[in-house]
Amino acid sequence: MNSFKFLIFGFFTLLLASCQSLVAPEFQDVKNLKVDLAGFTAVNVTGEALFHNPNETTITIKDIEMDVSVDNQKVTHIAKTFDIKAIGLEDFTVPIDLKLSLKDLQINSLSSAINMLSGDEKELHFVGKIKVKAYGINFNVPIDHREAVKLRL
Image (cartoon, rainbow, N blue to C red; front, side, top):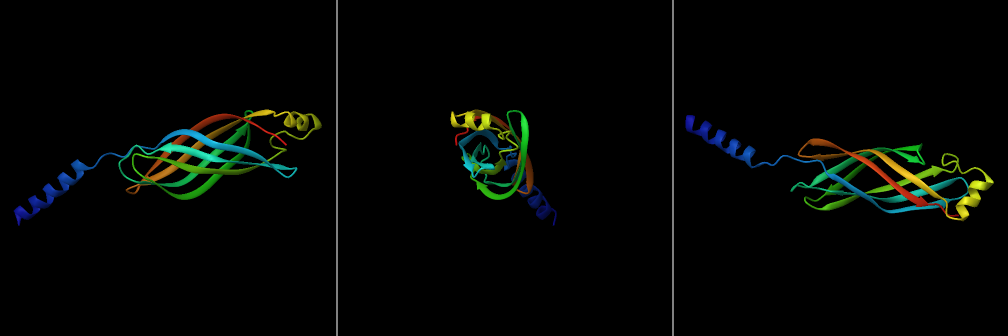
């Protein structure tokens, strides 16, 4: 009976020693960012947040929570749930899709509309976190990204 316990103990010790610790995915960039006018009251912002999974194992992206600012003024909060599989040692993307009010963007005057006709540039700032899961362990990955975009009518 003692040899059986020793065998089980040895097996679990070997199993634990072979496991690598999990590392949070690395935020890299925002790709394919597009800003399109949606009628006369809003704009749609779409794109992809690019990450790298430094782990050898596949992880799951569970949710995203972030604030979006335009020219240093918060315009919206994003909270979405996902079920995105990220293969080990590869890059993966998380979709960005939000609608912003022109009022929140402070585009509510004739001069602002004229500036948009000439390609007025605005700075988008994404700040927040993405929750990922592997082997039942959750990680929060911070995001802090700025990008200048041109708004055109």
